[in-house]
Length: 486
Image (tube, rainbow, N blue to C red; front, side):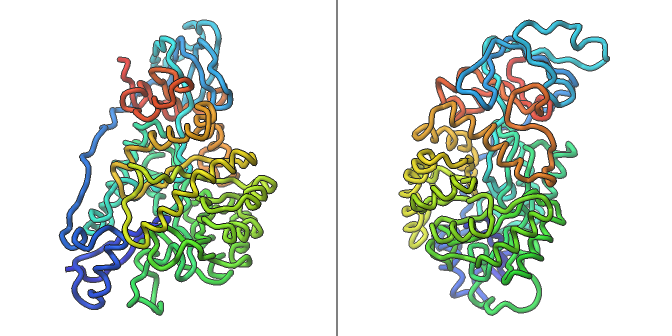
């Protein structure tokens, strides 16, 4: 069975690529190792591909240059309450005018543009949703499918999932690691439908860190780059000079921010949760390289020691952090460090784990409740993300995961976090921002990424858990991708 095994790593998970079997050199160690990575040994050897059916075909985009929403109530991405009724005029991808009275034809007629009028009927118009921790390349395709596929298949599957992500109302994602540059370009050029992507490029990891998924027989490292590095999923870099080079390479390729692995993870094979990764000088080298390009560094870390070290080095955002103590949370608030939290709960949406990984998963899920409570108590700038990987069901639950924040926040706070607040985090990319303009709000001059909701999500947050039913219009950049009121 499996011959040479290369690995793709994404924030704590691994995809074995180019696999043909488990026999051959090192085969005895690979079956249990891959089982820990992907499921049971029986699943790996049998090649069972538990993939849910594809759903939600993206309709053809509407070509109108001008779109007029009539009689809508507004959630603007900043406020605690709805405003309205309002008329909202969108022209050439930007919200041009918001009026508490009817906008007449004289405001938009006569320029030869195609016009689409949408009767809101009191429905709620809100900003498109933003997922601040997404993995565009591997979110929905099962690991075992990728294990047997060519590299090109990963890109084609990712393009398909990008369209479905948009149809769930997520008009922007911050990609937290992976080779998403080509997908971003294809979306931006209109070749495929999908969200705006803020790419991190390859995740940077130390040897033996959260992004090092070499097999035991591949140690010590010799020769050229690993398969993971060649496909652009992760880069192994040790010492300040190597880290600096790896960061500069991702910035050269078009990264809008940089992602480093600063601590242990749940799904990694070699590093326990308590492990602190990199040193302050190494982290600082990454921060300096990013700042020289006008952007910032975010790090994967769960523990107090790992996060304090990252803050000392000048890191601007922490991914995860479910195991932090209160003093460190206070320090994050004082320093203005962002906390990109995910609702990792031991429930129906948790990734199935076994053995040591299951124990780590339980430890993290137990810390989730306290993490949100501490973030709220101390006023830490908090972002929403999902960190879905290798799961069609998990990707389809993207909105449901957002709705789960209702156990800690009011509906208005939840929606602000996934719109206006997340947009402020994206804006930290400064000069590397691939989409200059205002995102995450409904206001004049903002980019027209909008959702028309059949109902009031400020009264019933569960509406966002079923976007196929409740999101009747989805617009990105002034282009209507879904119009269920026709």
